[in-house]
View 1 (spheres, rainbow, N blue to C red):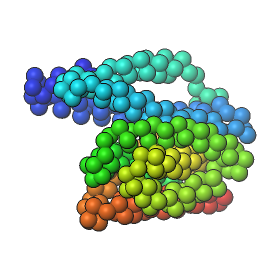
View 2 (cartoon, one colour; view 1 turned 60 degrees about the vertical axis):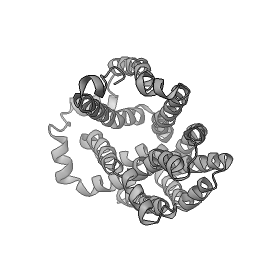
View 3 (tube, one colour; view 1 turned 180 degrees about the horizontal axis):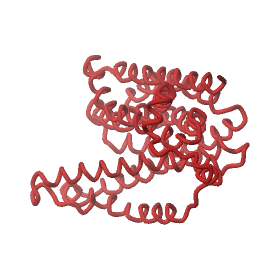
Length: 323
């Protein structure tokens, strides 16, 4: 994407190419999450599955650190340079990450559990059809459970940047710095939540995480509304904390919903369908903000609704598993 032509040189072709490449990126990410998480779980020792699943999720805070750090650095350029060529640098630098990811993908073997399933002819030729035919309810539960991890996080990042800069009138560096510190906290909490999931089970830990997310929705925005950089940092730590808890356990939680022959597809679709819904959340948060007269109670209310949906999904997951 960093090598795309500009609108001035290619016209409407430039944004079309950008959109297509972003779509390809989304397909690649969506296809990898379920497989990576499932592989970590199946390779993990029996008493460490929660931790191994959580370690996969470290990609989110690490990605946040890298992206906010990259934007912070290129934003130091003069505005004209940034708009002309500076924005391309993070995309070009990401080639290194792509190369590492491809190397890992080509050198990882299938898990013994999947190899046994394949040897016994237990794989599905059309897992998506089977999933929608036999496991629609479980898929819906998976989508709901994942909603905080996608939709809630989008509001607390994409929308929050716009809110802080456009509504509160603060420089972007304030919120980007806060998010960078929040991402560090997210990394630590993700690992801790994974260990707790191994001890108490992913469902109880997830239910606590979703409950904290709901309880902190309004206080997070109150802290941001103070316009105090220190309190905004605290807000982002409090925001990313419960997100980290729910994100850490989501793989181990959804893993329990589906049988082996459709597990990869079930986990992937749960995440991807949730991401489709989440894509509209920053825009919907803006609608809530407008309806509330530019008051933060609008988007905070949306966070509560999202949290309640995911909490219901986590409770349902525990009951389905128990049944």
